Length: 162
Image (cartoon, rainbow, N blue to C red):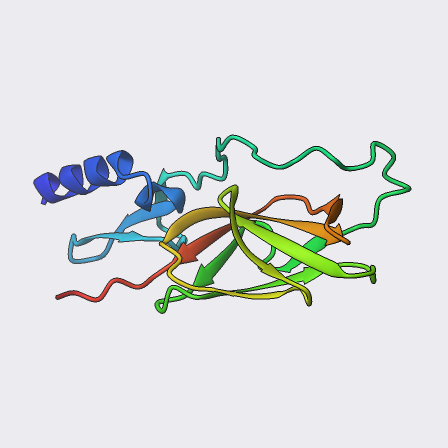
């Protein structure tokens, strides 16, 4: 039993994608050790949830330095630090933005340009499980006029034993 727990702990600590969520352990009345992502009253945490990312920013810096002159744009779904359960590896993203002439919203996934829209609704596919970042940029007549704050989300996929 100890060998299993040791191997599991080492695996969790050395695997970055799995170490993104908090991991709790508890022992039942029969002595069976359980590892879960949800806390129980008798559980102890063995891996803290991590929310930091260290991607290099690749966004243009053409925005106005005066926030009062810049339109506001925000990602409303998913919310920051939200965990998304998606076994199909799909994600719906909604961006709120003001009315502008000839709008174009560019969506970045993990600081890489992913797709564009003129209505603020995006359907992303083939998203790997783990921690990801989103950022949106609003263009009017092909000129960058606003950039959203970064949103971090966690994509969770149930693993089916084979």
